[in-house]
Amino acid sequence: MDFDGLKDAIVRMLGGERISVRISTFQNDITSFKSKNDVLTLLIHLGYLAYDSAKREAYIPNLEVAETFEDAVSGAEWGEVGAALSDSERLLDATFAKDTEAVADALEKIHGSVSSVLNYNNEASLSCAITIAYYTAKRYYTIVRELPAGKGFADLAFLPRRGTDKPAMIIELKYDKDADTAIRQIHENRYDGDLKKYFCNLLLVGINYDKDKRGNDAKRHSCVIEKISIA
Image (cartoon, rainbow, N blue to C red):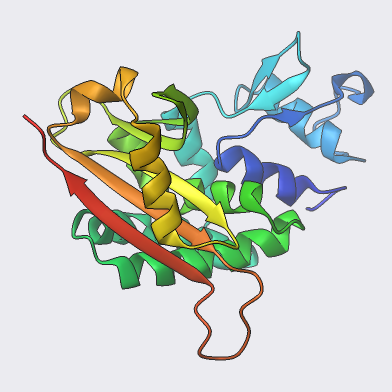
């Protein structure tokens, strides 16, 4: 079902966002649905979504429930969104290996599929696409958007969970610029604070999306990866 942007809402929540929901229209009927709000409200009642009553927003509450949603969108009707979730472990391995071509190619693929669902084409769409593309990273990381650090904010910070040996990652996003600019911004902001303790094992990932490039050989996504090891 795609009542009034239901698929859009699910993809955005998979990408770590919260969705406004009107729960007052729900009639406690679990077989007849008339709107996106009815479906989301039922999922709240069933415990598949958490609900912030102050902000009237729904969101996926934890990793275990997120995996249930991952299973739910693995069908053919979800197309490349489900495929991207399945391929996310390979993308993570490519990032650790600093294979920038593989990372850029994978992100270009998922960004195209997610943007077609979300109906917007900007840095917010790219951020959502990246979170979905790195979906299995949630097993190893706490992913924080706009983490205060140094002179600014890290667009996406991947902080290793306790007991994992994975490197921390800072992902900086740029739109219609270049990946080198994203890396340069990381250095210029001198990210520290909560990130400083990870400087012994830290990956800097700069990603740019250029919407104006055209042609079969045009590279719309680019990626630069650097490793920092400061004892």
